[in-house]
Structure formats: C-alpha cells, structure tokens
Amino acid sequence: MAQTFRMDLKGKVALVTGAGRRVGRAIAIKFADHGASVAVHYRSSHAEADAVVAEIARKRGKARAFRANLENVAEIEKMIASVLDAFGRIDILVNSASVFARKPLAKITERDWDATLDTNLKAPFFLSKFAGAAMRRIGAGKIVNLGDWAGTRPYKDYLPYSVSKCGMIGLTRALAKELAPEVQVNCIALGMVMPPEEYSKREVERLVSRTLTKKMGAPEDVARAVMFFCEATDFATGATLALDGGRLLV
Figure 1 (cartoon, helix red, strand yellow):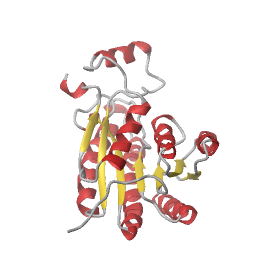
Figure 2 (cartoon, rainbow, N blue to C red; figure 1 turned 90 degrees about the horizontal axis):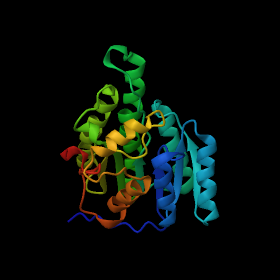
Figure 3 (cartoon, rainbow, N blue to C red; figure 1 turned 120 degrees about the vertical axis):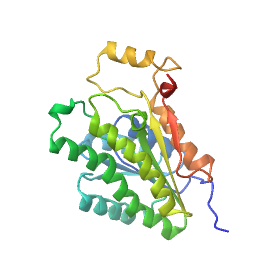
Figure 4 (cartoon, one colour; figure 1 turned 45 degrees about the horizontal axis):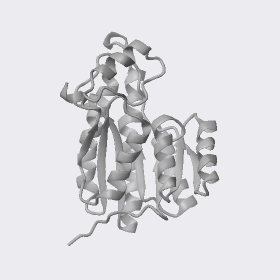
C-alpha cells in the first residue's frame, strides 16, 4: 500500500508565491515559525520580500527571496531550479500570488484576460508541474492553492478573476490525481480577507455584513488553514476548503 505522511515541517522547504505582501507574507512567516525553510517568491515587491526574509532571519529561521514573473513559464522553471539549488529540495508549494482587477465586461481586453489567467491559473499549473516532480523524487509533498469563493459564485466586474478561480478548483482536483499518491494537492477558497486597497470603507462594511460571522478574515486564518493541509492530515487531497465566513450560505 502506498504511504503518505503527516508532515513535520522541521527541516522541510516551503515555496510560497507572492510572499512579500499580504496573505502570502503571513503564510511564509508561519512556515518559518513551524521550522521550515522558506523560499519567498516575489515579482516586483523586492523590498517587501527582503523584509520577510529579514524577519525570518531575526527569529533564527532560514529564508531566501526568489524573483519570477509568473506570466513567463521559463522564469517559473528557472525559479524552481534556483530553489532546488539553494535548498536541495521542495516539500511544499503554496500558490498564493494572484491578480485581482476590477473591470466591467465591455472594457476587458485581451491583455487583461491573459495577465489574469496566466498568473492565477497557468502559473499554478506549471509551478505544480515542476515542483511536483521534485516532490515525487523525494517521495512526498504538499501543494496548497489559494482560491476564492468567486470560483463557485462569480463576482460581478471580475470576470477573468472569477474564471481563474473556478479553474483553480478544477486544477486542484486534476493535480491531485496526477501527482498521487506521493503529493497531496488541496485548495482554500477564500472570502473577505484583506480587501483591496481601493475598496471604500462602505464597500468593506457591506461585504462583511453579508457573512455569517459578521467579520472579516485575517491573513493568520489563511496561514492556519494552510498549516492544516500541510501538518494535520495526510488524507485530504483534491479538496477545497471554504474559508469565507459563511458567505456562500447567505
């Protein structure tokens, strides 16, 4: 019988995309707090990524920053190779980086579509392909994709984003089959966690009021959910966890 395992993060290597800011940052720091070495991916947030690495180092953890434009498959493959050169292995991949842009249907351009789908869906596939191969060589691994409840109930004026998050749920299921039994692949469908900076106070209050919990989620909530899939269970794969304050039930 094939064996999977409940992962002890000490000595493991976690690659987190979009780890310089917001939710990705919280996840990267949580991995370091649990004893993992962290590959901190960024595209343009170089200073922020360096700050995450410095914060982990202050706690005597191990981390390095790696740059890649996730719209470019060659850069993705090069980054995976660089992480393997630096740390010798990849045990965990968290696909956190995402493009979230509001635009009405009539104004969506081909560039808008490509930029969103390339970053939000194509990149997680190729990251998982390359990192997953490295995981299978060592016999085990975990991939956690950050989705959105918009993948089930699309947002108005966010069509490419909603389509990409719908695809993320399907990608999670397909990768779970392709990478089994060594690698478990799961998804977290987020609700309101750290709203975009352009949202007005009134918009945020309206969205919070539509949750069952009547509060906004925090990056720490997401980080703990990622830890659940990585540490607490070896039996979940192909699953999507709704972390949305009950928004889908309203």
